Image (tube, rainbow, N blue to C red; front, side, top):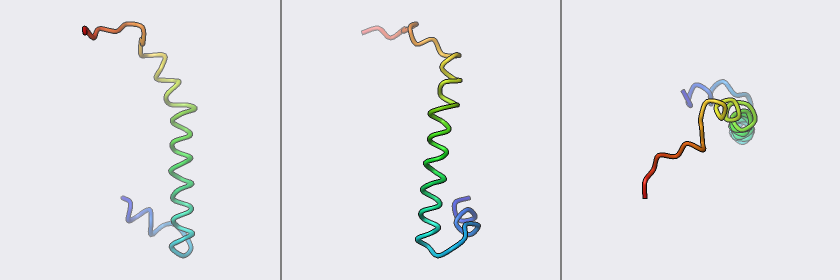
Length: 52
């Protein structure tokens, strides 16, 4: 999968690396701003069952 993504990206290796890092940053930002808040509605964080 990563090899296919590397071959699809245009330019020399340093441009590919920059684009890949920007793609990873965009995916992480999408997780932080959209996915994790959506999941927070399904998880009850006040219901802790861990005994010490």
